[in-house]
Length: 429
Ligand code: ACO
Image (cartoon, rainbow, N blue to C red):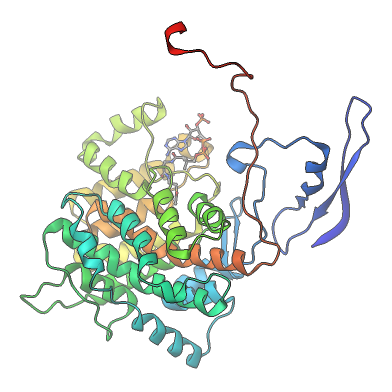
């Protein structure tokens, strides 16, 4: 939305001023519309997009200073307490909470798509057994495009919907089979009497030898992890999905690109880093020496701090409660690893170094502990983040494709390489 504020750009070489409109969102800071700037023959320079909005979006809002996160206007605290992951998926995709009937139809649609094509199983078998499950996820999700030629017309809203449902439905299955292949376990199948999170636990941990009973507390904790990771506006992987999609690439290829981006340690790998750090510290007696190292900047306290949240990450507060519930349920409060985690949390929350820098535990600090307590190996933490974030990615992709003003993404650059020069034959170099 445009309002009547304008920003005027003045030059110190006598060129005409340039007036640029200021746009107002429904929440958040105003945004200067610099599109007219390209007519000047110059570009703006903003590596890392620290001052640039790449798109208009109606899906998720974050205020890092106030510690607010809203999906489609609903605060994450309310969704985590009262909703569940599949309802949140519907909300993110469609913009509104479903009625009972809409929920039923949506859930049935997701369940109908949760099996994997039998031929896809051969693809898993092409990987080394010790491949990282994220490598398998990137490959298998990208390969889905080879299986669904019937619904790859991105300009057809019905095709977009089916692809979104297929992705939400199949990602837990793909993640679980990546784990099982690595462990040498036979592939498993979904069971439709179970909830989305229960089904994931079932596909991960069931064996053909005995009945697997899903623990409800653990399934609820997992559902909450999915809900908290479902979307986070224009982060690196979501922007990757949008950029890939802006060329008209099919949704499976775009989500594979998002998974590849999420794999990086600065993005999806943080909860894995928390567990590695706990292993390195070893026991509570080593905490003071570790903290000295943090203050000397020898290493960071993983799971603390956030680029956007300079107040408590609202997801962390919710995850902390879930963490307590899970440790209680499993009787793990006295387990040395989890005692160590709680000791670190307490010291960091009281230490002036962290207080002055507004460094709070982030969602990954607690989600790493919860996943580890549930028995999920560290290498599966990022695949779980990927399966939860798929709905966010596909919602952004669908929002972009449905926008008639969509353009292929094509950032410009400030070139600082060699000037024009002539080729030198090899014998003269
Ligand atoms: N441990 C110790 N000190 C820290 C930490 C930390 N985890 N995070 C930041 N600081 C310090 C910095 O050294 C700096 O200190 P200084 O002012 O004395 O120089 C100050 O706090 C400000 O830090 P920045 O690096 O400017 O903060 P930035 O916003 O750039 O970084 C980041 C955010 C990357 C998340 C950082 O806090 C970090 O590396 N945390 C650990 C990794 C982690 O948990 N990442 C997960 C993020 S959540 C997510 O992705 C879902």
